[in-house]
Length: 298
Image (tube, rainbow, N blue to C red; front, side, top):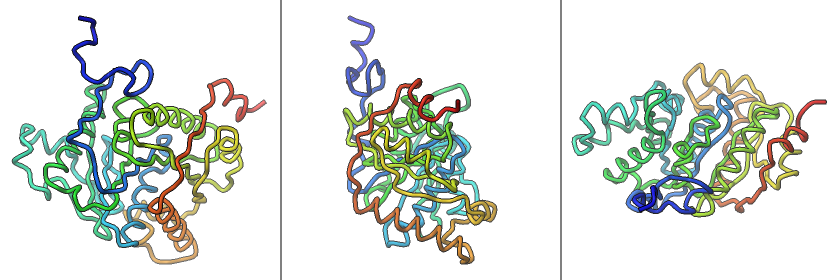
């Protein structure tokens, strides 16, 4: 027996050299449109995810947002406070999921958005993919995915290891949040490569990128032109976004001013675009040296 003969469904499933186990068919999400939001750490994925969830809710959709970060702050602007994580709640019942009720791990936020914080293993231990899998399994057991129109995974940072790529096994489309700077675009290039690897064996495809907290988009657009990618949104560096985080609210709850109204309009446009369906993108990520030459300074 070779060292890998006892591991099921490995070869070619998740990119060259991968040792990830294939998605359990019992945890497949059916019926809902599923989006995974990725991007460099601190770029505004949670702000983007929560406001997109609010926009989908404003469209009359039934929305479930799953935060996939150990610091469990994905949904606090929807609920007004940090929520306990699924992994901690499971620990409290010694992983006997049958003892839990939906209200133990799901909080209903603004607009009726169902909010779940998957959490993560302690630093340096375990795998984020396990946590995502346990969360989806729990939601399936309690039939909380049956009536959802939209599911949004808000995924930790720009980590592209197998664990944090796990939401891509469930998603229809991956959305990348970036900024008009080298580090953010470099991370986007790596995330594109991760999604392309997953798309060989899963239904996930790239929807495009959102330029966030950026007055200009010239560097993002130059990169997109080079690799064959699309910028589908632009959120300028409005102070209203910063204030909404401080107030623990989405922009849809904020007192309306010109910036707030402009942000709401852009999130509504994006939600409508994503829900109606984007053409799948097939960009070609750049080798490290080429992206340095494209965006680096002389």
